[in-house]
Amino acid sequence: MPFCDMVLAHQLLLGYFILWFGILLTSWWLFARRRPPRPQPLPQPAPRVSILIAARNEEQAIGRCLSSIRQLNYPHEQLEVLLGDDGSVDATAAIAGATMLGFAGSFKIIRIEEHLGTARGKANVLAHLARQATTDFFLITDADIAVPPTWVQGLLAYWRPGMATITGLTVVRGPRLFDRLQGLDWLMSLSLVQMVSDRGQPVTAMGNNMLITREAYQATGGYENLPFSVTEDYELFQAILRRGYGWLNVYDPMVLAESLPIATWAKLMHQRRRWLRGVEQLPLGIRIGLLLYAGFYPALLLAAWWWGLQVALGILGAKMLAQGLLATSAFRKAGLKPPLYLLPLFELYTVGVTAGMTWFRLSRKPFDWKGRQYRE
Image (tube, rainbow, N blue to C red; front, top):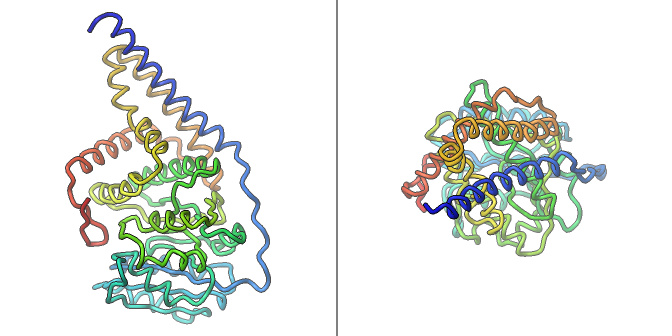
């Protein structure tokens, strides 16, 4: 390579790292200094709400989920809990019924046996549940989620007239090292999503911790009239935005739900490939930013080749320090202790996820979700 071209290449690589760290540190600074909107007192009497849960072969998780519903600090007589049993062949329904025995609110298990319109999978279950719901507020969560006691009032407290969706906060919790790495990944990612959302850019709504009004849901025509997507929450969110409704992402311990971790690396890849379908539909600027962020490790290898191993290790150490700042803010604002000891292993985890997802995407392999396979 000619000398001038080599100098330019080194300058471009240096510029990439300056840009990369600039974006991450600016994101951390904006997130750390954010002033969220204040929740408002609920009207009295407290409004009735419908809690919608889709379940398919969830006998290991559904008892935990419904037990958290029973522990809600909200008048139980104002709760309508609808569980959609999506063709389960295990004891999901029996465990659910036993867990909710004696519940003071309304509880119903609905066996899903037919498709509504274009809806499939979880979207089809929610389409059925929305038709059964009798209130003006739908609170959606998943069978592998445990919601906090303050969940209902926490979401309702941020709702304003004209607003369609309120998205809460979710963290992965589990005893294994692999589980804790997933938790660090989730909360750091959600802090970045929150920072972008605070700037007025809608990114996504998570279907495991979300409030949507009946009015907005029906205005979209419901899942049965939306294009099928394995990221059904994002498809619904986009349909709501097109109709001019307001939205809000809430980063508040009051709405911090806990998700069970993914058990194996292979299942994690299938989950992330499903999520990538939603990422591929994000605005171009956000996708470019994500590609820039993901390019760190190839750039680091180039830095090790050109500038030496010590320089590359210094850059990697600076990355861990910068991510430590973000992790500290992300966990503390969620009311949790930041697991900074995980940061060195988190680098290996991130490399593995990036490499695995790249291979998964290029190979165009079908991905599995809840025992069903989906293709590109």
